[in-house]
Image (cartoon, rainbow, N blue to C red; front, side, top):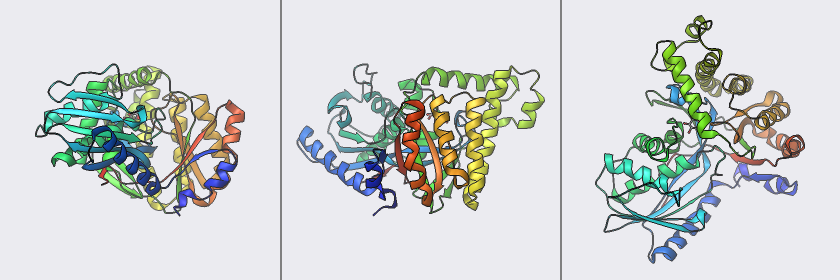
Length: 409
Ligand code: GLA
């Protein structure tokens, strides 16, 4: 049995929503559903099935669009696509998670879809692919995923990357993981209208089993860090509906750019804490706080890589706590519920792990790292305590680091 499935029954009996299916079980179920649905919708068998994972960011939030460092891991929840080439230029896509909705368009005329917004991730990704590697034709596609949507675990990045991976597999295109990631980001920035950085697509394309991935978001250089065997990744969804995500995200981005411009630099990546502090008196306080978060978070992210490599639990916990405080006080992207979850987790973990919000913020998830021997103790009362404090139900995901996008069948 996969370690993450241990005690599932026990937790379910306590009426806690714990999602910890082993990837193999999940994947074989999903593959069977996809293959069956493909035949049902298109009347013949799929040629290939591809997968791209969602992600959790262990540390380094709101640093990617400032050219800084991030340390995410690809997780055992993701998106799968079954596909077959066509002899024309038509793309047919069926979304099993949207009641089997079917969308059709031509590669020669890709426009924004107001009726089925999910299809814009496909459309935007294919526009980017047509521009860079035009040597491909139409396809029949069926999609299914199990990344909780709107939770900040990158369901959309995994969707973009898996679509690109599928087209590359079907048409034997020379598409690297980095290219797929950049095209996915381009789809978000230029077509869907979300001004995100490069972290989510890069980890979905380039993640590595049992490893976290330090990414230099300026050079796109990668350094993998093996997750210690006995370290569990716990993700807790606050189930706070993420509000104002796009507008606040864009505001934060703008403030970071303003701070960098004020300091005479192209991006905050080029500013040291000493330089920032030297300019503190002249800088608008809110811009100082935003920049302080970004610069200190990048330093913490590199320190976290070293702490993971040393298996230094005390340092891992301290860095995660500092990161959350910085996101709360300097960057102001947490919510009271995220703060409550992190403080409940910190109390329960003591010296045996750390917790912080993860992703863009304004709702969504927190991530905790702890020794496996502590998981049961931590989870025993977490959902009840969270409910008592907020009136909300928490969803808990026991995760492990998996490979980035691959051809599954
Ligand atoms: C969202 C964006 C990422 C990144 C995070 C914050 O997930 O898609 O590019 O900016 O927020 O770290």
